[in-house]
Length: 347
Image (tube, rainbow, N blue to C red; front, side):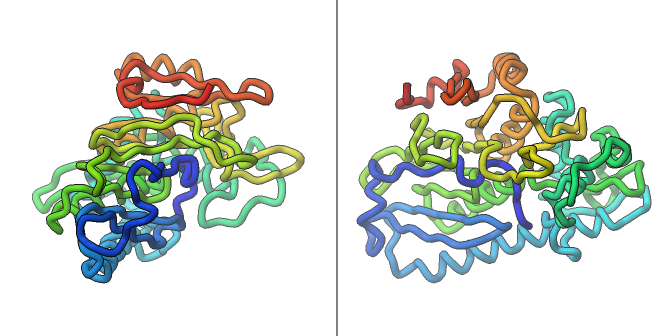
C-alpha cells in the first residue's frame, strides 16, 4: 500500500540522546534496521540485542509488513481491502479480525470527529489525484465532486459479527474504503507486537510518520522523538517529547501536495466539502496508547483546522500538539495532556 497521508516525514526520531548513531553491532548497544513498505519507510531500533540477530529480525519484520500491505493496500488489486472495494454486493463480506479492528477504530474516531476522519473518502482522494488513479489535468468541477461525495459516508459502512467471524457490510454497492489514514499506525502497532513476540522489550518502531516505543535505549535513557517544523525549507525540531511507552503520529499538509491551475492542492481532503483543506493548520501530532489510535486522530484534527481541533482535543482529553501558520511564522499549541510528554519546545 502506498500511504499518502499522515505526514511520513513530519515526525523524526531524535537519537542523539539514545546513542543510536554509534552502536549497532553487539549486545549492550542499539541495533538499527530499516526498509521500505507501503510507499514509505520503516525503522526499528532495539536495545541490548546482538547484531547476529539482524538478518533474522529484518526478515520477520519485512514479512509482517508485507502481510499488512497485502491486507490494506488500495494499490494492489488483489489485497483484502481491494477485493472488498471491488465487491458490489451489500451482503456481509468476511474479513480478518485485524481488518475488522482497524475499521471499527476508524468508525469510532470518525464519529467523534463529526465525520472529519472518513475512511470512505476514497473516491474524493482518487478524484484529486492522491490514490491509484492519475492526477487530474484540471481542478475537478463541482459536479464531479458532488458525484464522488455521493459515494462516501461512514453511515454506509458497518462491522458486524457473523456466525463465521467478522465481516464488513456496505449499503452502497460502490462504496470505496481507503485505510491509508491509519495504515502507518496499524503497521507500527504490529511491529511492536512482533518485537514482544521476539522477546524484545526495549524498542522504538516506526512506519512512516507513526512511531511507538517501549522500555529504554541501551544506555538506559528514554526514547525521544522530535516533531519537525512543518516546512520543506528547513529541518528543525519544533518540539521534543518523551513517548513514555506510547504511540505518536503526525499529519501535515506541507510535503504531500502539488500545484494545479495555480493553486496548491493538499492531499488532506475535507469530507464535508469534498475539497482539499485550505486553512492555516500546518500539522497535528497526537500521542495515544497505540500508534493506530494516534494515526486516526491526527488526520481528523487536520481536517477540522486549528480552533475546532483545539476544542475537540480538550473535549476528548487527547494529547495533541498543533502547529499553525501565522504569516511567515509558526505558532504551536499543546493540550494539557500533551504537556506531560513535552520535554522542549522551540519559541
